[in-house]
Each structure stands twice: as C-alpha cells, then as structure tokens.
Amino acid sequence: MATTLGTGLTGRSSYWEVSRAPRYSLVFALPLLVVYQVLAILEPAGRQGALRNGADVVLESLFIALAGRQGPLLFMICLIAGGLWLVVRDMRRRGGGGGLRGAVFLLMLGESIALALGFGIAVAALTSQVVRPPAMIGAAHVEALNGWSRLMLSVGAGIYEELLFRVVLVAALAWIGHTVLGWRPTIAGVWATLLGAMLFSAAHYVGPYGDQLTLYSFVFRFIAGVFFSALYLLRGFGITAWTHALYDLFLFAAAP
Image 1 (cartoon, rainbow, N blue to C red):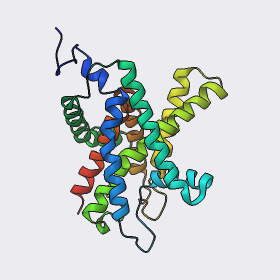
Image 2: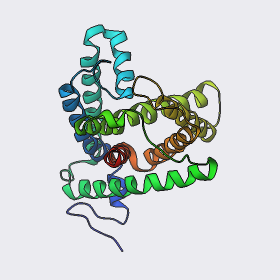
Image 3: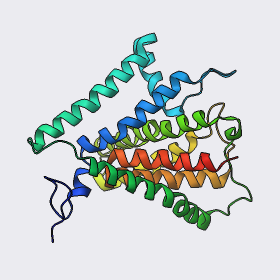
Image 4: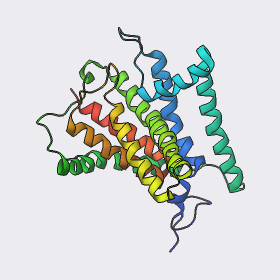
C-alpha cells in the first residue's frame, strides 16, 4: 500500500529516496555550515590561535596553498557554489513537481537524532568486543571549552569531517583503487572505506586539541568511520552530517 507525505510525495519508499537527493540532503546540511561559520567568527583566539575543526583547517589549507590569503574565501565560494549547483541540477531533473517539503526535513531530523542516540551504544558495544574498554573514557581539553565552543566543534565535525573523510577522501581512495590499481569496484570500495576510517581515527590525535592516543579510542573511531561511510552511502550527506554533529553534541553535553 502506498504512503503519502504531503502533496507530490507518494510511494512506499518516497521518503528514503528524496531524503538522499541533493535538493534535500544538501539543504538539510546548510544550517550546520551556517552555525559553524558564525560561531567560528565569534570564537576568541586563544594562546594557540583560533579554535577550529581540524578538517576545516585541512580543507582551507589546500585553498590557501593555491590562493594565499584569499584561500578561505575561495574555499567557501567553491563549497557554496558546488552545493548550489548540485541542488539546482537535482531540482531541474525532478521537473517542477513542487517545492521542498518541510515534513521531509522534520523526518530527516528525527532520523538523525535516533541514529545519533543509537550510534554511541552500538559502536561502543562493538568496540568492546575487540578491545577492553578503559575505566574512564574522555576527550582531552573538553573541560576547558565553553558551551558555544562545544557547539561549534560539534557542528564543524558534522559538516567538515564528513566532507573531508567521506565525500573527498573515501571517494578519492576508491577512485585510486579502481582506476589506478585496477581493482574491482567492490574491492576498491572496501579498501577505501577501511583506509579512510583509519585516517579518520588517526586525525583525532593531531594538533593542540587532539586526544590522548589509546587503543580503545582509536578502535572506537575506526569503527565509527566505517559506520559513517556506510551511512553516507545509504542515507546521503545531510543525514550523515547531522548524525555526526548530534552525536558529538550529545557527547560534549554529557562531559563535565
């Protein structure tokens, strides 16, 4: 039996299809980008410089190497222009079947909250089957951050870490495996996912705000990287970014 979600959204799998489409997925992720950029501008510089998400710094650094001081501006222009092009192309392909539906975004938010709440439990349980958890688990420097800084880092992790490690890195590794090394797409995809997850985990221990390296935390983040890669392939960028951001936000909120 078909289900209906507002005018023009009919079909048993309609929500699962449209929520992955760029017109919904990228627009859904836009508030994360806006909140992060506003809070990053307002964030006061400390002794070690302005606090930023590490993936944001890596991506901006690539553009700074190309365009110097105008690199951050060029990066933001390319990011917004690329997202806008994907959204417009998707809406043109759809062919004028009505505008965006608020009900879809509400369902996407509910799905992201549910995934974020279940994520830590599932990944921790799986990690505990591989490595014995320590008596105390915590992130370095969290206690020194105020609420706005924690919010900025949470949304920054959702938008920029997923952009860098899933959209860019995993896709690039899969392309190398398939095109350069001549592997079958499935083998290249598995290799890209596992190596990307390892690099994703390792990145959390770099820089002045990096965590102290432990086997448990490394394995936890490795499994988390595999999870986020699978979620990105199945549910698209928007829900993956929100799930990551909400999980980090819940984690920061629980920290002292």
